[in-house]
Length: 107
Image (tube, rainbow, N blue to C red; front, side, top):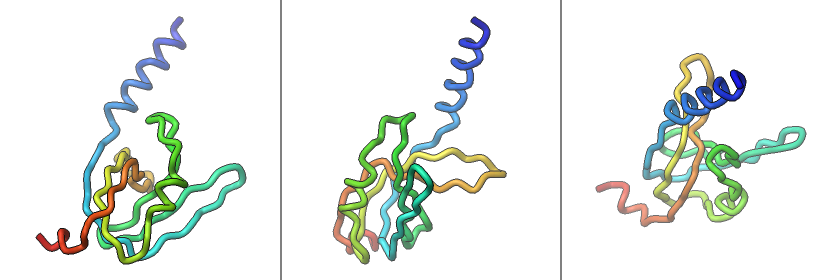
């Protein structure tokens, strides 16, 4: 019973510590990072580096589909999820992506 309570508290703290953000970006480059049994993509933009990877906590399983839509020198509205933990280097994970006209970035 105590293990279930600790697990529930941990889950609630994790969800509340997670931030969400919408950003307009212009893609400069991207690369695939392959690990032993998994992988993800790094997206290099004018607003920094973002991660595009599956996220089981938020039921995101379409990172390859999102990556297929990304083209260099195009602009996008993205929604990201991320945890801010000062001693860890973590990228903001792209959850959704919509292509926009790059002229919108200058407004």
